[in-house]
Length: 120
Image 1 (cartoon, rainbow, N blue to C red):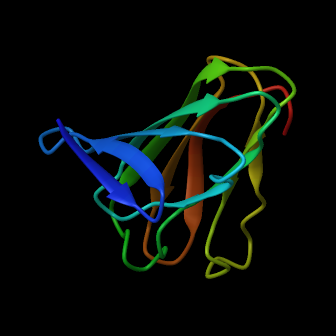
Image 2 (cartoon, rainbow, N blue to C red):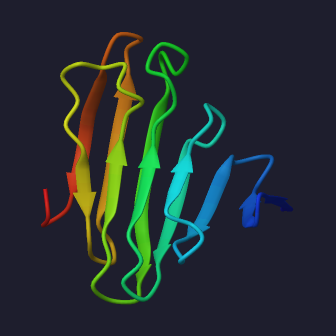
């Protein structure tokens, strides 16, 4: 695994599986996914909400993205948003451990394949 620091954000990216691990904090409230970050695991810390932005729907054509909450410090939520390039997209919200969202881009819009969440 390679660990890199970007603007105060430490994140682990596995070259082979393209997994991303993100922990919400006072300094980290948003994460913009690249097309290479298709598996994202989120730790929600101490009531710190996080918004994860999917990559451009056009750029991600043919790709599947799986985003899951693996740890929850309590009273926090994860919003999965697009870059405003899919007019029909509505943000998905996860707030509990084991909540997840799996989406697919057809190049024109995001399609929700599977969700497990109580907050949406």
